[in-house]
Amino acid sequence: MTLALKLFLTPCLIAAATLVGRQWGAGVSGWLIGFPLTSGPVSLILASQYGKEFAARAAIGTLGGQASVCVFCLIYSWSAQKWTWPVCAGLAVLAFLASIIVWNSFTLSLLPTFFILILMIDVFAQLIPRRPAPKTAVKLPRWDLTARMVIATAFVIGLTSFAMRLGPQLSGLLAPFPIFALVLAVFAHHQQGADAAIRLLRGNVIGSLAFAFFFLVVGVFLTNLDIPLTYLIATLAAILVNGISLRLVR
Image (tube, rainbow, N blue to C red):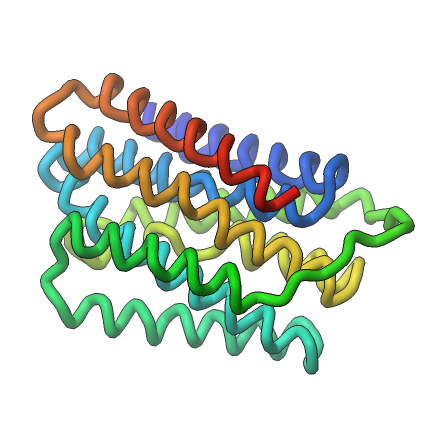
């Protein structure tokens, strides 16, 4: 089951995010990847491989990791107004890793980490500039979708393979590594321009509300409920929250 999750679920999810972006724009695509598309499967795999207690503690770190993703989105968005995508990607990844180091220097607890993330989402959504949608469609190369799927899948396999060595907190912090945001933002920036990347990243920050509630549910219920039931409740909570936040993105 864990191998199937790694090899099939992740590429299917990033394919869905890409196709949504082509249909409804970068902002909605960014909103969609605010869902725990990589860290959700990672959390489920950790629970299956290393136990519910490990995954519940990792969920707390994952909330801190998503706060670092918001930092990534902010730095990339600000950088994109001046520089090309390689510079923006490098600065944003460095900012993410620096934020992870700061988070990992503390022993995290569930509710404080959750509320800090909610506060950061609110503030950063205001700090990232709004950009208009493009008037013309961009023709993408045939290899575009395949490349996105391969990159994202490789990350999920790598992280879950080394999770036990990293420990639950650091595994959780790294689980939301913005692989979807990075891949989609770089492709949008290169193919459609900086405004498309900025729209996508602002949508990602707003969409992180679903992420926050997903892992709040996992952190609270996983040790007391069955694994499938916990992740079902978490998924329903995420869908409900992001169904409300979609109005802000559109």
